[in-house]
Image (cartoon, rainbow, N blue to C red):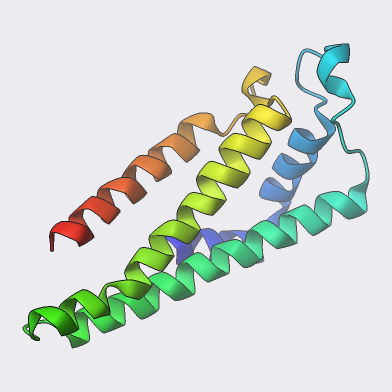
Amino acid sequence: MGAIVVLNNVTAPGANLAFVEHIMTMDTTNMDEGTQWRAIRSPILHRIAFVSILVLEVAVTVLSLVGTYFLVANLGAPADAWEAAKLFGYLGFMAALVVWFLVIQVVGAEWFVSWQSEGWNAIRDSTRINLITLAGVILLRLA
């Protein structure tokens, strides 16, 4: 899934860049004075944030692909080799949680109060991704 997200952000960055811009400017929230001081209106900082998220998504993809390679390469291996092969899988899952929980839900939804926005709100999508990620962590641990 990470590879598709990266592909979309590289080949059609407009949609998610606009998402980052609206989240950071807080222009679709209720404009409460108590939170508006957090808004960032600099297009340069919007692009830096977008590229930073893209770099994290690339890390998720690379770690997950390397993890998949090591797991496939160690199918049927002794238990200690199999457990060691899980490392990059765990790192890929943790990187995914950094992106979709820490960045999207904590920073985007809570700090920039995007949960108030009807059109620029990623809580549902990021929650879905986080639940799938946590299920993957559990399944990898049980494997």
